[in-house]
Image (cartoon, one colour):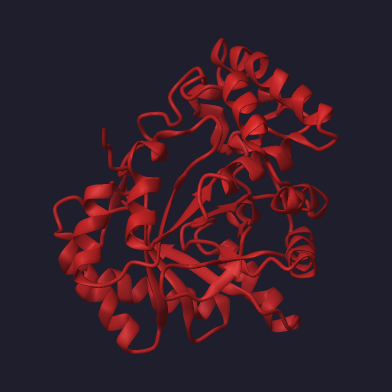
Length: 330
């Protein structure tokens, strides 16, 4: 597996990571056995970056990874996140970047994972009224104590990244980025490259739309994240699938899969871009890994841009509730 640096000071990690939200069932039921099989496949493929969060199943994803690590020796770099809370009486989501909350959640994550050091610790969502410089001071203390390695932020703006990076180097920014979610091209991909920050792309396969078989909204369970997502509700969904079908045909003409082609496209966006597809299937992870070795020429990239131009998708990438805490820019 090819390697890419996790920020200017490293460490190097696999060019493809594994997102582990799926281990908590946001796209349908799964099991610890199935998740362990996926982690074993990641290990065999040379994938070393494993990405999770404290709120994925309220600790379920972290605990599944922790139980795997206790049974198997694996050279994984573990990333997790904190900063999202829900009011216990109303269920309303809000954000807390206070030193007390972040420290408590970091300690919980270490226990869940069964480790004493987290390689990359993200602020999952920024608390808008708390200066990011103050948050960086908190994260630097965790780093000085040896509890975390790199510092990361999820779904922030380029302006916020620059403020944070002026305090201390940020290792990674994580945002949604794929052929149908291109906002990072409007400043964040460039800011990360300029500052020496890794850009970690989550949902690089459009939550399943770039798979060989299109998802079926009629089969989505009540807990499926996509059920309330505008891009998966008709007429948007049907229009999106019609737009993506020529891309799938193009992948077949290149004797590859649409999954591998979508991953290869992302990797072509810059040497600092690291996609982290999430899957419950060890089989599908192989298709993702194939994208790392797929070399795209300028003519390939031009054809992909012609088939799926920036902004082709119908519907917002998030509902109003899902979009809470995401910093806008441009």
